[in-house]
Length: 66
Image (cartoon, rainbow, N blue to C red; front, side, top):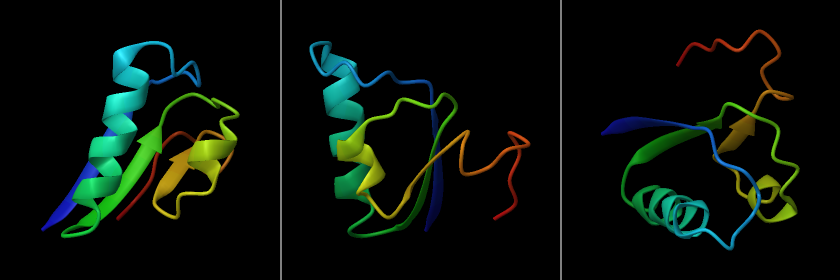
């Protein structure tokens, strides 16, 4: 299955969703074809090291084709 996760997360891991959503996306990518696009540039070095992670700096126009 191909999945696209479109998020608007900040790098602040003190909030639950900013920790649990990336964890869920990474786990899902182990069994499915996943593309994760975070609409803002979070500057999170943790997320930048994840192959499926993309942000506004990666895709300048804000749109993408799969």
